[in-house]
Amino acid sequence: DADVTQTPRNRITKTGKRIMLECSQTKGHDRMYWYRQDPGLGLRLIYYSFDVKDINKGEISDGYSVSRQAQAKFSLSLESAIPNQTALYFCATSDTGTGAYEQYFGPGTRLTVT
Amino acid sequence: AQSVTQPDIHITVSEGASLELRCNYSYGATPYLFWYVQSPGQGLQLLLKYFSGDTLVQGIKGFEAEFKRSQSSFNLRKPSVHWSDAAEYFCAVRPVQGAQKLVFGQGTRLTINP
Image (cartoon, rainbow over all chains, first blue to last red; front, side, top):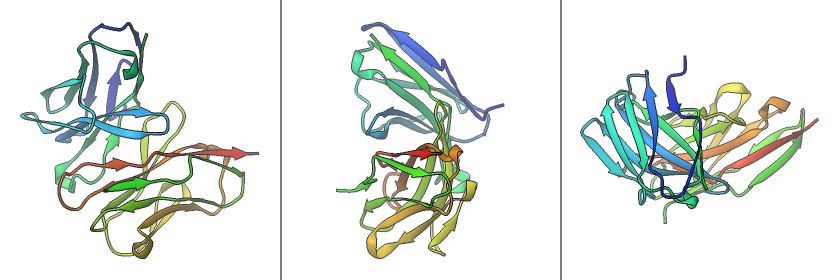
């Protein structure tokens, strides 16, 4: 079984709809991250969480919100989706105990907003 | 400004040929350095990392990378590529001080000719 899972893997939605992307991990890591990937731009950080009570904005948080429901679960919401949020979204985890240097990624969610 | 640059957006090499992917960073102090690979339809997988010590680091899948402080570079190499190495490769850094987040380069897409 995958250590970091994301649901759904693919989603097509319409402009203005609310959508939630979910991430779960069985690695026991305390830190979780959401990134979006756009061609030619690499990965950009949306939000990150160092523990259940800690939520931080990344470089492109506008239009997104997150919820850390438990240590193992970190959800990303688009309250009112717009077409330029069409992208590949990745969840990642890391472990403070190892120095939190390395991040481990889920398989990604491909989101299309029409 | 702090940044990570992968100068080559797309590289094509023949199977069996050698490979070098470039990565340059601009940070005040040497950051922690990583290379990730993203195969088609997959998440990111860590190839190798550099924190300190020996400047030539070995990774998985036969890859290695060399840290050169004088050039602020961390180039990825492989002596002989295989068709399965076709993927997108990302260089990433994590500053030693300050925000404990990964910053990614734009990525280099590798195509292998048979």
